Image 1 (cartoon, rainbow, N blue to C red):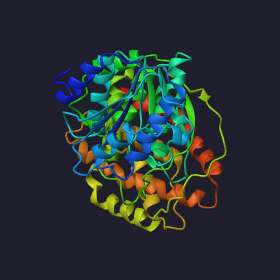
Image 2 (image 1 turned 45 degrees about the vertical axis):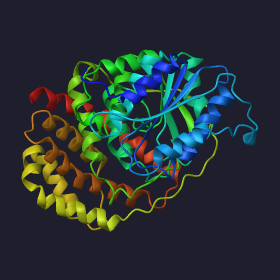
Image 3 (image 1 turned 120 degrees about the vertical axis):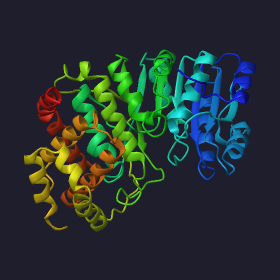
Length: 421
């Protein structure tokens, strides 16, 4: 498993605490502007819903050079319960903040949280992104109660999101995960999860911490592992997700490469499983599904189409190597379309993703391969935006569901190419 991700100061503090029933982890990196809200909500939620349980809030930090850790500790340790009409918890909440050790990224932060959970012997654990603006104390119950009360091993969030927020989820992570593993989990990379102590042990047994999972691939890795390892899974309705949203045409960064790379890596790790799966089945959604209004997101379609057309030329050699002649030819037809007429068929996109997934397994430069997929993703998202620009969020969601069904129906194409590789 390699060296521990727990900083010595964290290990020492855990030794003083001894044992706990619940651990809530908050990974962070330069989040001084948002972590106070998250810490306050977590602290109040634990006092409101689990006043008799021994709970620990652990800020696993990536070496912030701002006041993230100071703000977290100040807020988490402040007695503000009376202000919110919540009684003091019978078991005082323990507060811990420490840097993690290992590859910079969210996955290493999670590994430290997992190790802390194991040392404390907790029954349930939850993790929250540190940039959340919509988290409430009720989220604590929504992520922990399914584990503590109903015996679920893994709890995914179910958000109301603006139609153009989470485009990697909508176009790849959700449809591919659903088609491969047969479970409809709408936010497999949602960022906020609950899980059992037993699942923590399973996570720590996996030898992935020196890979890209230790950066941005941790969410989809956790969800896939829980599915394949047979843990009981549910979703909890969390309302609207308000966080630091990004235009998919400008702020993709390394996240796409690492999330999709993790998806493709796990496709090989679990081929014995997904090849036996046909169709998909719903996953229970717990909690009251209120009507909420997510924050709109402006999308620069001309910029994305520019990236798409430029990428077709710039990555031409890789595209010819990876894509079958029929798919390659159809892709060029789409690239010849204008902003107002672009129509990227869902079946074409599914075949492209499947062909890339197969090529990824033996490609000499996997990063370059995935980078050549990004412009095609821009083209597909541009087409999605054009198709849904007059739709509300619910109508746009039907288009995403249609894409998922196309991925499921096209899965035999993946099996065929997988066998021939």
